[in-house]
Length: 160
Image (cartoon, rainbow, N blue to C red; front, side, top):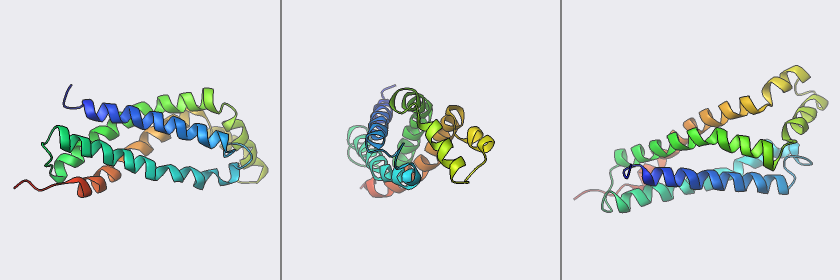
């Protein structure tokens, strides 16, 4: 357990940061008045996500690998973090859509139908908690693995 404690800790920090970001989005009106711009505004979270990965792998390097880490070791640490984030992300979606912004799906469905972006049936099928839970888990896997690979390049320190 000690070997993956760091990744678990940072996955929990990631989820708390994500939930805080959702609260910020809600507060700024990105889930209501600014729903049209939500798709790109939500991408502003990416630098925070990358930064958390960077901090996690740096801590792993410092505490486990005696300040020297190979790319592969850093990548594996990032992948373990990604797995924890992917497992926790449906819970974050549940909290987001039941407590932080319960009207989000209704608002985005109405926006999509009103602006002829989707039929009501397609919008209802796409914008729901089950679909978002799956999307968040698989999105976390894809984004996390790529992020882990990139972060590992910058965190590695050669073993002499």
